[in-house]
Image (tube, rainbow over all chains, first blue to last red):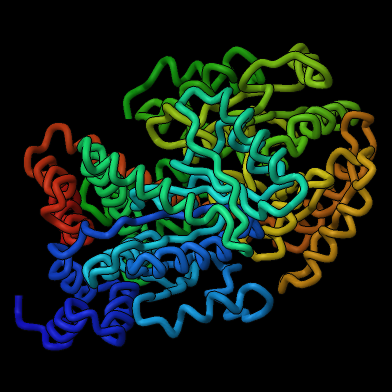
Length: 318
Length: 318
């Protein structure tokens, strides 16, 4: 591989903890392509040290407030933090500065915190690849904890945080949908459940509902904590639970096993995305491929037969 | 292609509207593989006639009750119906016969209705391919309307019903999560919103909330209807709205365009799934590929570099 001056410079900057280099490196990694791949290849030996925490939950469940409060708790303990937010309704993304959200903005001035929001569109390699790349860069830059925030409670959203070591599901007190989803087995069971807005009159009842819903599940129930991020209640306890789980996993070898499994699954998902992108790109320039897709559009060939033809054309096998 | 007696027989049976042949054909189609592909190829010219309605919504939103009531409305009008349910919490799947759900069982005895539940796991070609295949077989069998029911309100769940001509989102009165998701732009906008459990005291307020949430969206707001499937209220109106939309789309050419776009998107998604499956299968028998995945698991190679290697090994290109 030929020397690559911009990548060399970014690698050195990220390793030195330079915030500007970090920002540019994440932008490059998000973009995808050959330079991004080279950057990740070079930084990869420096990764695997951060504790990656995934945070998921429905819109309005209080994820952003919780992330902000967690950042405060972590900083008070002298830990550096990276935040990757893939929530289109997140104030990180929209830049809202109203009410309690102004707290998030405070962290922008803190050199020990690096916050990156990700749009849900416009990543050549797909959102999962961009999220993974940003997380790896922050890990290589030496952040102690990386908070990966994403909206939603379905399986695809859990997919985005599947690179995390520990996963927190934020549930708002008084919200029935997510409890129903847990009960129905639609939602994957997280490592910790944080019932947010703990000052709400129904918060304690919500904790009981969640515990009852989990008691019918086949897997061991995760801890359910009551948090009130706005008043910084329960957030210390949430972090202590996450740190305790992480330490326990690290000591008995589960962490390495879980990470290995996550990385293989992530790699297979990237192959699938890459294959789809390859077909989309080639469709514009390859008349034979374009003709197959036109026949699909015109209902002249069924999708399953078309897939076989496409795989043969694009990947040279049937 | 050599003559294939079992497939010939199934094709003839499906065309003749034989319920046993239909059940076996769907099972074969769900299974995937060469016979399934041959079956779909043969039946495909007979498809495209049914009105395919997608129904999505959170667990507990009342989708199954609504499906059951819709089946009743359709049968009263002399229309034949196919139901494909991919909701793991659905009574179709679990066979629950309690309370209002007993009504669904009545339809099992009606020859004009064919109901198939799909587990969310165990399809070689993936759930999307199995769902598409089942829908195509029901379409070829001459069902007038196919109801495709799936749980969830995220983008992946909308993905499963993306083959539908018209999509209904079921929202329960008093449920805030889905309204938040609409407002946040996380959820794709359906063609019609049915606010279920219309006898609930807060149902009318829920309709207002949904309309208000939609008014901030950039796309034109879909109709919001109040339904009370248990008392058969609003279900006729829901069907009339769906039929009206479908007829309007058919007359101005939008239907063919939407179907074409859906089919191309579905085909690209199937290519991605196929690529992933190919890698998974080959990993067991190809030492070079297996070694790459082991190096991913051991963190010796980063996922992005690994993807390039895997694509080269499996598909013979870099």
